[in-house]
Length: 237
Ligand SMILES: C[S@@+](CC[C@H](N)C(=O)[O-])C[C@H]1O[C@@H](n2cnc3c(N)ncnc32)[C@H](O)[C@@H]1O
Image (cartoon, rainbow, N blue to C red; front, side):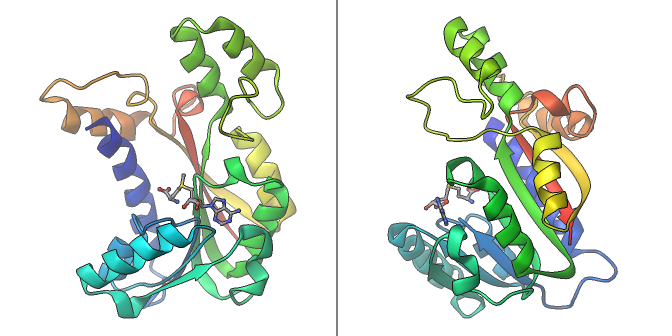
């Protein structure tokens, strides 16, 4: 259940963006690295038109199957492509909301990727970005007794704990904020995703609602926000 406590917060932040008074009736959403449609399908169900750009043909096949099963295939387009070549597959300034969740950590050049995401966003539109938080990996490794890896992650500019680390980059709010600013965006909010859920090994039966409430209450309050497993940043172009 702890996963739900994390995901609910991101979903609520997206819904709040789509519910803005000046939001278009049918939002054009781009989900880069949207995988198999975990957000695209529910967003299409809510009436958005969603383009998913993903490097994986397998993920896109699952996306298309899920979209068909949900009856929203007409509102979802899957495109195989790379964030590095976004302008080659989607229109510039074509989207009201651009999502890029849990992808920047595996790209070669995060700043270039952020610039490409910004270019795909219409002026006044929003970017929703989720990244692994470099502070949290240090804590996570340390509490598991992996002190050498904790020290390595602490010292590494990308927050990597060693050569076996699957992620190429972890981020902090200031660093990602600077990339967004350089790409012409203004950061509107920073939330920690999984402040407590990522620390809790398993929930007791009654925890989900309380955990969700606790996550929400602490998600934008330093220092809790700053030790979350992931960071969600909403920025406006
Ligand atoms: C960890 S999954 C995240 C999926 C989804 N965004 C989420 O938050 O659950 C990363 C996704 O990004 C895709 N991906 C990885 N590198 C990419 C790139 N350079 N350009 C586009 N998609 C990429 C992968 O195929 C995968 O579907």
